[in-house]
Amino acid sequence: MHRIAGDADTFLEALQEQEGPLLTHPNTSYESRGQCRMFNDMYGSPLWPLPAFSLLNIPVSWYAHIDGIFTDAIQRIADSPFYEYTDRDSVVVVSSLSALSRSTVWVEDKPTSSSNHFGQPAFLIGTEHADKVRSGENSDYIYTGGEMT
Image 1 (cartoon, rainbow, N blue to C red):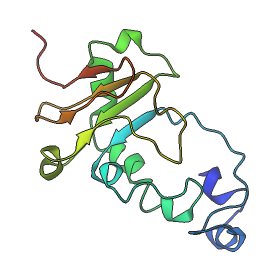
Image 2: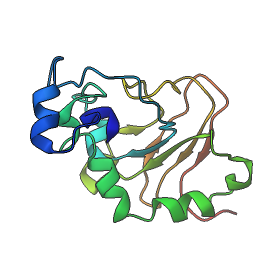
Image 3: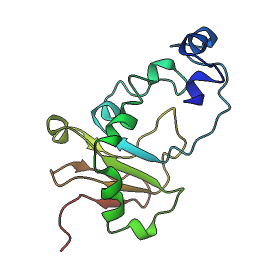
């Protein structure tokens, strides 16, 4: 949130401090790990991403944070066969696509303006619903979410 609102105490103050394109806050020195991605319909959209420090991220890009509350993503990470190989700096991409998107959108690590992890080895976690999960150029771990045999 600090990346968007800076030190403003109210939404109105944060709005008044925006100077960049698409309501972007001028103070972009905040750091966050951002290594875990909820790959939902919004994240998979070709319209993604908005600038990292834009107020428009609250209703649009922050959808993954809201969506994460209502999914089993954390449980799926913990239940994945490669959980023991992850650490706090691991890149983890968790599918949360809708039934409509699963057959057409590839779940993958993708470059965004809000992170610098693209191209690093990643842990990609699908669902039991036939997600299309694709590895990048590195040694990615892929778990499609089905039963292990």
